[in-house]
Image (cartoon, rainbow, N blue to C red; front, side):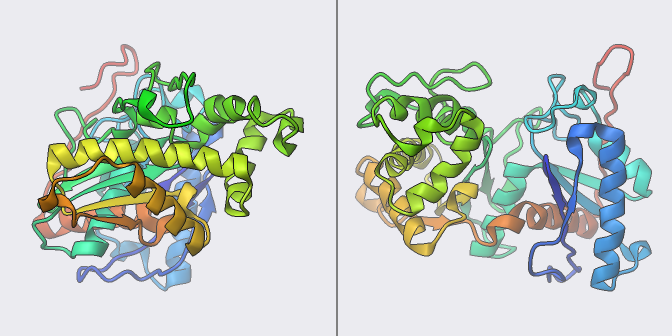
Length: 346
């Protein structure tokens, strides 16, 4: 299952890695109302999804969970809370452990970017490939992941693959002179500060509205709502909104060049809401990313740039694959807990 700020997405996977739900299966998450309400929603939605699929919950061996980060590898949310969960009760919350207690089953955990990256890698290369892929997932923030030899690079504390907070040479982006993109994390010029819905609202839309006087979005008082309209207008050919996406494509091109030089990957994958568009716009955006990438070595010119398969369900599918790996290997899930008095992770 993939838990978001507004909905939980479910899928089921058997031991042969066959998905039993092909489309979107969602249930309201009510995450903004805090952990207790949200966990009840997760379990209730799971029961409904299982019934609709003809599955008995007692036959579920292990549950894979994905949520927005930042969080530890064991599923303990940051002491500052999750990016998309605004209720203060999420700060330092052990979502994996608490969900496991509620359902009486082992629960594995990935952040949603890593989960989507795992699915993208699996869809391209299958289960046993020894390939390396880099995924960037553009949504409210920017998630992603690095998969090498079929495994997720999680890092020492679980914060590996936080690709949105990699600094890029944003001053090199054409047409963006004077732009000062600041991320919610406080960094200036990381990828998320330019490639996310939040970046459009906080940085790119105000910057370009000043350069396009009289634009229809300039009459919108609520920048948050206006930012949500940019993708649709860009897809319909609006010059200012296409320029916003071109800047994002240029930022991604610079970022992916860094990844190519660090990992020498087999594939690069772009996904998220920014790519939930027509095929024509997708190709335009991917071409713009390619054009922005500095010239590669001749030996690396064949690295393919893909759009994330099954974009809406990628996170749930990746979480299911992680659970399948646990079930096959008979592994153990760490029992990290948070001391409620001190907030210390134990």
